[in-house]
Structures are given as C-alpha cells and as structure tokens.
Length: 118
Image 1 (cartoon, rainbow, N blue to C red):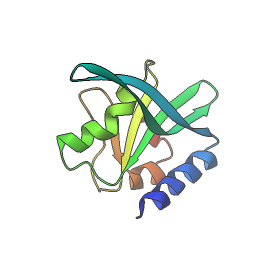
Image 2 (image 1 turned 120 degrees about the vertical axis):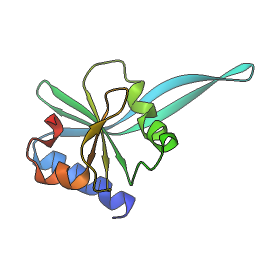
Image 3 (image 1 turned 30 degrees about the horizontal axis):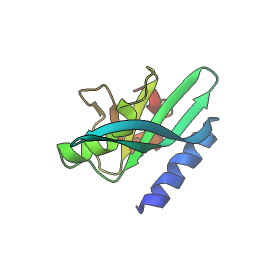
Image 4 (image 1 turned 180 degrees about the horizontal axis):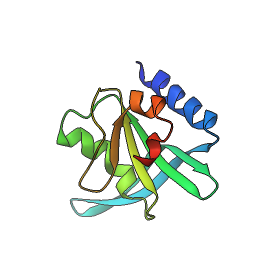
C-alpha cells in the first residue's frame, strides 16, 4: 500500500467517523555540536471530535528501534496527554512504546469501530 494511499485511507476513515482532521507541526530545538538548530516535525493527523483528540502517524513498518524513534519523534514532543498512535501496514498486534504511544496495524484501525480506544 503506497504511502500516500495509506494516508488517504486513514484520513477518509477518520472523516467517516466524524472527526475533524488537520496536519500538525511540532517545533523543537536540538543541540548539534556547539549550536542549536530549530526544527519542525510533522504530525500526520490531528483528529478531533468534541473533547476527543488523537495524534496519529502513518508508517509502512517499524522494523527497528531507529524507525520507532523516527516515527515517534513528533508525538513525544507534544506537551499534552491526548492519545498518540502510530498506524502501520504490518500485521502486528497492538502494542505500546515505552513512551505510551499505541502502535496498531491499519486493518485493526479500519475494521474495529473503537480501534482508537485500544
């Protein structure tokens, strides 16, 4: 499933479930050597419905710790406690990272009506 197609499927499903959906930007500063670098990290989707809010990233797979850190980077820098989710193409069981980010496969997301609450 190509990247943009996956994003479109996730976006359409969120809209079908009644969510308002936006893209988010997280600003961060990193120290490299002796200087600071400002960066902007993208959050693929911010889904809101009433008092509910979810931050969602889309990834093909999370084969190693480096990829998990890359996909989690923007989510762990969001300063509130709303649920953060990474949706992957791989057929995996839903699990949570050490930072509490839920990782689920796209099929569970699409087929389970309350998948965002898992």
